[in-house]
Length: 550
Ligand SMILES: [Zn+2]
Image (cartoon, rainbow, N blue to C red):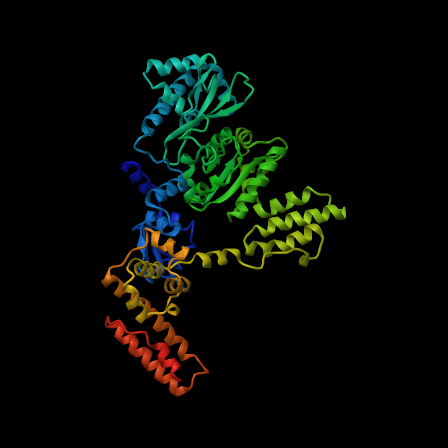
């Protein structure tokens, strides 16, 4: 069970515009946002999202609710599943009843205070930090600390009666052949926070020449390095405001760039950028600048990140620090202007990726050139169709070939997908109701036929012809679909019919092959139907009878 205060915390951190825009394209419309409703078929947007009320509502089909309801309906998830999905989208940790997450955080907080206190007492640590140009203000802001000898940390935990097995759970200590030992031994510590400012773990740099220059907390129930970004908690306000985020590879780069005023800087935690970082990166829809080292590892990492970000349709680009330069040292040397112009002249992700692929081959050699074309073409096909067209020309120039040798995807994959997934809650509920109450079938059949269902014709036909079909079970078992009572069923049928006859009226008015006399008759009939429906009377299904009589 997720604890109630944890759910409240999650709710407080949800922004409905952020959430829904990860699934739908929202357009600003006055104080609100609009989109075509994903729950019923439509061409003009009647699905409205209100940031001030933090709700959505469709004026076409009447669905509505908060962020949680949206994720439940759109992704077809249960309530707890939706909470978990939202928590991971927002990088927030949920607290479960049986666990003691608060206490886990408390231990990390205590350790952090302990390390911070030791920092000011340790001369060599202070010297290292001073030499890197880090100011007193930054030391405070980033809570830089010092982890002592292994036994000192163990003693600290013991004398403060902190639970050792919990300390193990959060990755502070572990069992070794000689008993308990500290994970962080004689290292400078950098606490790592969640987006909601909860301490989750540490990154730590050696000052006595350990083999591993940096170590991080191990994977724990709190700490998952592939979803976290160092410094995000301090940068987030600026990221939302300036719509920009700078991603570097190191803790010191983050600290020094913040110190120089680049306060949207974050870093991955000694790992490549992964797809699990993307939900966090999407928050506030910033443009992303990758600021990576110019060595082979840095350029390879930048390429992989470019693939992810371009396929994820992020805007932004890459800045590579050549000739052994790094952002932290540039700040220390006062090269702020140079940094500024570097960040302003980043190379677009797609260009960077295309160049990287082509550079792997010697394109003067025809076989190599063919390989380059195949690889770059495969990459292009993984992008949104709009980009495919845009970059065809660039690739043709780069490889010195005709543009028509580059193939792009003609079908709009995305659109096909959404059509397949299109659902109409009201139609499905009508079908569910009939499935549950077989005796309502007769009533429904005398009023509607499958052609009146806009989205779920197929399901309605199955209901009549093959009511044990598997796709009907999905409707039957879907708990988010309501089982209507008689009144509601009547009301929903009225809406369905009204929609249908209004559509028919439009179609018939433009039908050339229909004789004038018949057309008038039919229009009158439909208008009469609409009138009756509007007065709340369900009419028998009689449209085809009129048409067939000719
Ligand atoms: Zn709708």
